[in-house]
Structures are given as structure tokens and as C-alpha cells.
Image (cartoon, rainbow, N blue to C red; front, side, top):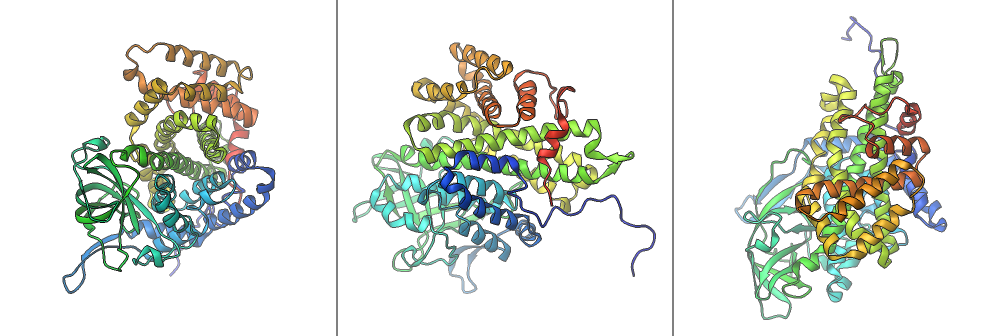
Length: 544
């Protein structure tokens, strides 16, 4: 029997049935800016189709179901045979299949592939971030495998395929494969040189037997994994297939799945190797150098993923406040709420603009771009991923008590928001990597200064921030203790320079005043009163 005590009013419509790509002018303009004219129409069509998929009620429900029905570890079959498999809800497989078919593992095979994939990654993260982990690992395995041309020729066509094949069988019989990664161990964490997993050479050249463990193995249901182990010549990178060429299972013992704060739909495992067959990638003793290309690619994906999470959090907050009324007016029209929403929108736009600029650097491939990426990727990974959590929490607060309820989607975004700052090297690791580049690669700093120099003279606050950064870099005394401060400034100045060059003047003015000029408080919603905040909120509002 229907209730008769009240009518439901003053609630926003669901944010479904819309095109998440064309409703995001920041992402659209970034794609147009970084792609050659000949590719723009095709890319826009592909991304709009994906945007409609992301905005559909059905696909959003898949994200909810994949998150609510966490993967389950199955170590043995009914007869007692060891199988070491992970069972997922059907929605997980639907999402992963859509992600693969959308080209999220195919950036290396087409012109403008990295920019197109980056935009798609930002969109797809907004549906359910958990399934982006295997997509990211698979994409990032390509540069590592290229250390061995033979392996690359064999595996790259499978890695960059747009076919999702979930069955565990020999890779040679599959149209597409997924890759995972296992680097960290209990005793070492980020210090991978402390790894104790042993690699003993076998009779066949380039093959080894691995014995040891991995404390974190990403995407354990994958077809193959890149892992680090101690060979006779030192720490070395290896390819570990899940299924051997003869159809037998490799020794890949899943001990347990991690019980994580967020990222619930994605499995992360502890794994044991006991005579596990592996193929060497690169030379013995060059494990870190070999796998660093994979690490750099996954770090950029952390930036992209955080930008996607921020965009969805801001979209939900602006959408809610544009429909919800309080004290006789729409929330988004109240001066104080408008300040909060505008501030969040500026943060989201700065993240997306920087992330797509870095993706464009991968497409360019020139030496100056490679030098810029060596310093800009860890700086962006440090800063953008750290801004994600406060953005998600503030966006939830914009919905009031509704934002604390699972059905709003905001709690899932809040739980997901710290992940990218922790994975692939936490904040201190990124800051120390930035210092390492500053000390060893002067070309990287030169490339960075040339990039920010393109905006010099356009905003006095940006110019002052560049001068202050140069002063900071000139003083190397005790610089390790200041590594976070230096890294933060590098990221902020680069964001400011990009916004001054490419964003609407209202956005650039708000960023430079608050983030570079110091005219803001410690919390969101403290932009200077003189700014045109209404235009910032409208720019961030998704249209149904």
C-alpha cells in the first residue's frame, strides 16, 4: 500500500541518462587541444559513445553491483585439487569487457592513442574505479616488455587487443590477455631491492624457477604478471604466465585476498611462488630499470584516475545543489555554497588539464617531452592524488546527510579517493623521485621550466610563484626534508601555467588567486569574494 503521509519533493533527479564526455567541457577541450585535427572527429565520436555508456543507468548499476559483490578466493575445487582462482560478480566481467573494447589497453597501437585513452580512463573511472586496475596494468606492461623485443612481439598484440577473454588457458590461444604485477614483499614494501624471492636459471635459456612471495599482487585473475626476483646477477624482471603452453597451471598459490578500505570490486592478493616457471624480461640485475616504464605508466593512470574521481564527485555535488532548494533558493545559487562548488570545480579542472597534458607527452615521444614527463609525472602523481580525498569528502558534504548514504555513490568515491596516493609509490616515494630527477637529470628541469615559461607574463601571481620556485630549487641545503614542499610547488606552478594558457579566464584567475597567490583558506569554499564564481559552477554542471 502506498504511503499517504507526504509527497517526495525537493529531490534532484538521478544523474543518469547523460553523456559524461560532452557534459565535461574541460575534458572535451583537452582532447581537442592535444589531438591533431585529423583525429578529432573520430576521437570525439568514440568518447561521446563511451560517455553515453558511462552515463547510462544500466552501466552505473553494474558499477554498484560489482562494488557490492566483492571477489571471492577459491583455492581448491570440490575434489581437493588446488585451483587458485578468483570468482567475480558478472557485473565485473561486463565492466572489464566494456573497458577493453573501449581501447583502455590499446593506447600503443594508434595515433593519438594516449590522449584518447587518457580521456576514456577519466570517464571509465567514474563508473567503477576497481576494474581500472587490470586495465592499467595491462596497458602499462607494454613498455616493460619492450626491453625484450622477442617477448614484445609475442605478447604486445594480445595486450593491446580490444577483445576481453576471461577464460584461463594458454595465452597463445587467446585473442586478448590481461596483465597484473607483483613487486612488493612483506619485508621491503617500496624498497623492492630488499626483495627475497629467488630466481634459479633453468636449462632453457631465459627461463627460471621462482621461489618466494609477493605481499601485493595486483589483479590476480590475469593471464600473466610482471614480477621482480633476485637472479644470480641481481634483481631482475620476470614474466610469469598463469597457464603454461601445454595447458597446465603454473604454480601461482593465492594465499588470501586483501580486505581493503575501498576498491572493493578489484582483487588484490598475496601470492606464493614455489618453483614457478618464469621468463626473464631484460637483463639480469636490471629489474628496476626494466619495470620502470610500467611504473611510470601506472603512475600516470593514478593521476588520471584521481582526476576521474574528482570529476564525478564534483558533478554529483553540482547536480544535487542545482536542483535542491533551501531557504527559498537553489543551493547552487546561495553565495556560500556557490563558493564551495566553484572551489571544487577549480580543483577538478586543474587535475584534468594536467593529466591530459601528461598523456599528450607520451604521444609526442620527443626527447623534451620525455624529459618533462620524468619530473612532471611523479610531481603530478604526488599532488593530484592527494587532492582527491578532500575533494570527495567536501563533495559528499555538499549533499548533507544524503552524501553519507551509500545510494548517493559519494561514500564509494570517498573510500576510493585515497587509493591512488598510496598505490604505485606513496607520497614520500614520489617526492624523493622528484629530487632524484632534479639532482641527476638537468634536462628534466629545463624541460619543465620551458613548459611553465610559455605562460610567463600572463598572470603576476603565476610569475611570482615561478620565481619563488626557482629560489626554492636554488637552496639545496636540507632539501630532502623539503621534498614534499618542492614537489607540491612544482605541480601547482605547472597546473597554473596550463590553466593560464588554456582555461577560461575565470578559472585561471580563481586558481592563481587561491593556489598561487595565497588568497584562500585551508578548506574548500574560501575563494576570494571578487571572483566570478557562478561561471565556474555552471562550467562544472553536468547537463542531462
